[in-house]
Figure 1 (cartoon, rainbow, N blue to C red):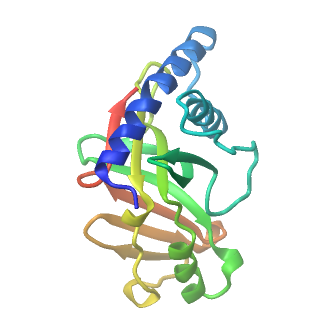
Figure 2: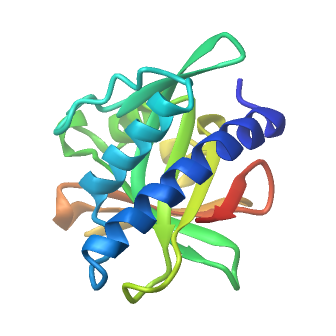
Length: 195
């Protein structure tokens, strides 16, 4: 289990390293936003240099549950990393997740979401329509925060099915290989810092 103290400890170790790497990239490519694959590399290097790992990251990793690993308080934690869009006014993070079509029925897809959660979610996020100069944000939260209910809790539609709870809104878009999209509240049990 990852608690708020773990989130802060991990975040405070990773943030300065990621920020330093972003600044180096900006000097070489000042008009470019960092893409998802590059941010995975930034996170992997930050894990490695902060003595939280080796990260176990392999470019193009297709492991569904985790992209890499880190060690905190003697525990190995699976880490899911994506890029996301942060909304500071609403205090939310929007991100895409798994393509669930491979899991068969809608009921099986919802069951798979719960099974596949990593221990820790780490995002290098930017604002919607960010310019090259806009800041990035490091966002961490425990995988246990993402609860998508049961299939009965969803409003099933075609092509989009929706789920709403206190801390997240989600949809599955059937026309996009059953892509899971989540808007997560950053109110509780998360760590956010500007890079």
